[in-house]
Image (tube, rainbow, N blue to C red; front, side):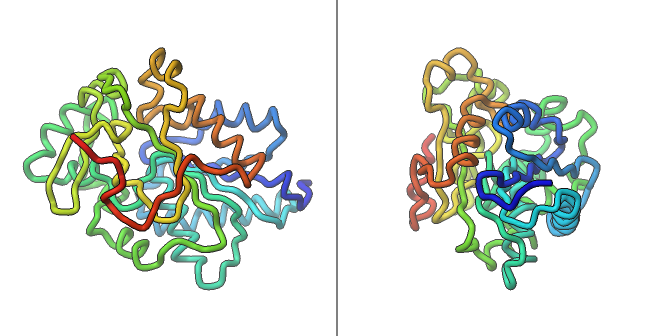
Length: 287
């Protein structure tokens, strides 16, 4: 049985789109080393909206509480589209009564405003080229975006994004973003786009930028009031393994795991910066 102690606060792990719980294997190993309980949620086979998956996630958390006997606060670590699921649960389903006590939401490469990549999947001009380029890399070779409910709900005009914008973040939760950036313009970070990331600008235009992880640009992740770390913090690690800073690799990136552990063990640890009120002018988007 887990004691109701902040020092033994369990962490809920929520993977991303087209992913699976094993993506957290390296993190789970580190969590075990410091005796932090972890509850690993799977939505790997669910082709559903974030709203529907959020309901399953809520049931999962309740089940884990019953099994463990733990009724205190929990932290949540999520990757990519998993963030939309978590935020829907916390900000839409649970915000009115705040029945679920969440201490921190730590999101790796989150599409908080939209996913430019999801937009490209449905773009009448760009879709064929981007899907051909990423087939077998980021999407299955037989991928059909018209059948992908989750990807459609990550577009800026979706019901999910509209509800999240309307709900806003919760004041009782500490939000943290862990992002990656190609600070040296190294193609190897995401060679399929020559190390850059597609960004969808507020005026409707498109730009390839180094301010992203190959899939999610900073402008997609930006969330006013959230703490933010932009990796790499260690240039030597980036130089030796730039591909570990791509969107796909963030859940097992060593620096990302170090930051996650720092926040879980000491929630008062400050983030590198805090997203200000101005958006998108301070998100670092540049060609």
